[in-house]
Length: 193
Image 1 (spheres, rainbow, N blue to C red):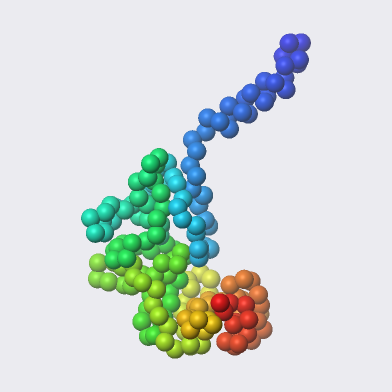
Image 2 (spheres, one colour):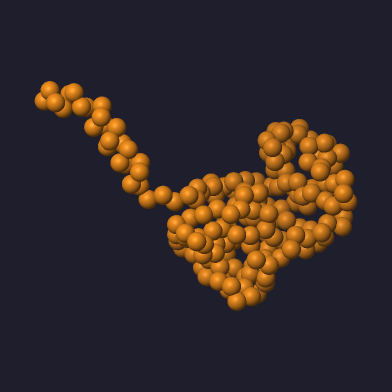
C-alpha cells in the first residue's frame, strides 16, 4: 500500500496521458445546427466522412456530401472543399437560409447558394443583386421572421444582411438590437465593405 501511495501521482499521470493519446482523433468539430456558418476556413481534415453521407459526382469527380459540407479524399482521410458548381443534393442543412434575390428564391448555407431544381438543390454562383436596399421577408423556421436587406458596398456589389424580428424590435447578425426596422444607412455603418 505504501508503494501505491508513493507512486500515486505518477500512476494518475500515466493513466490520463494514455487516455488522451490513444483516443481516436477526428479534427472536425461540429457547429450547432441552429446557427448558420458564414465563412468556414478551408480545408478541414477528417479521418472519415460523418454519416450519413451522400456521394455526389460532378465533372467526373466524386464528392462526399454531409449536411452542407462537401468532402474529397485527401492524403490522410478526407478534406472539406468548396461546394462544386452544378452539384445537385437532395437535402439542405436545417440552418439553411432562404433568400430572395431579384425575385428568385435561393437557399444559402456557409456562403454557398443553392437553387431548387426538380432533382433537388443545385449549387449555383452567388446571385448578383440589382435592387439595393430591397426588403425581403422570409420565414426562418423556428427563429421567427427574418428580413434580408441588400446593403450597397463601396465597390458596387451588395452585401445581404439578415435581421430577425423579435418582440423588442430587430436583431442584427452581430446581436445588435434595433427598436424599429433599421434603415439601409444604419446597416451600412456596420456591414458595408
